[in-house]
Image (cartoon, rainbow, N blue to C red; front, side, top):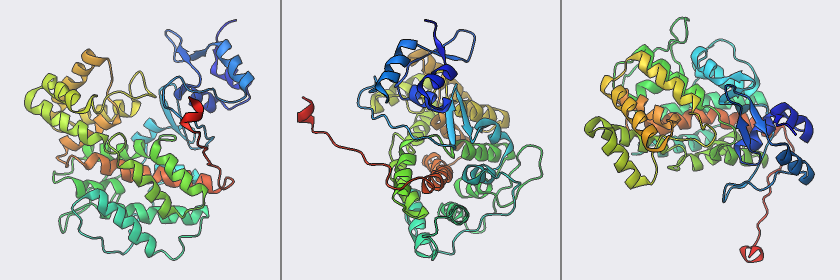
Length: 400
């Protein structure tokens, strides 16, 4: 029997084609790339076994829990990320972060209308940005009398103010003006989230190319299917937690060094490469972490498309020549050593280094961007039956 295409698999199993790709990304189904083509092919015997079982079989990857949730938001297939059917990389070149967020929330990506207004709160002067952002969310919730309104319009309105407040929680020198954002061939945008965030993260003069790259990073990081933080946020929404609590649920996993905090390790490795060269930097990172920070991604064996676009934009902007050279050298050295390609965390490290941002800037960018995705998943989950997520525990002794 000849191999099956993704559409043929979807028809045989009675599922959406996006679910086929979700099964593939989690190891439920194995796919083979046809030489000279981007089409994936599947073993018919594998598909038949899955059809007979009537549910996903256990992943071949150890210690992985398979959970598939149908969504209209983000799909990852064939090395492409789509937001509601639109290519996310194309949107990063043509949309402001605000437009991309609204597209995820309600399918409306109209022109930039007005700057989002932050909640009028006083944020504690805590030493860590991560803690100031968390405090900003809590204080914003305390001052919002209608936070229990879970209608789409109300949640989207809350999200605009909450994201603006999170940006305000990032330290800024008094009197610093927001950088102007240029997207495509349109007139410069004043008061954008990207422009305001740049002025709070970087002491450098806001070069248009780098501010545009920061905006593109925000767009590309807005959502990424059911990453750990998004799953946590979605579970909170399933029990009808308000949007502030949903964001707080997402902030927990985001703080992990294998999620939002991964770019800080890549930032350190990149700085080491600038000072000592790529080989010593890679060796030091491997010895300290057991892996290469900012390289490799389970869903992108051929390379993370988000990293590819951001690195191209950084090269075009000519931001930080020594940094650009060190980044290229690291990429070549990593390919020789492990055959891995850079992921989005590495591109955040290059951006933050070129723009003279602190090592934790990547996590800050990631967190503010992904808040838009958490809200989008919350809006979708609010429309689903409540209490959908109820895992069961099995005794290890019973399995032995």
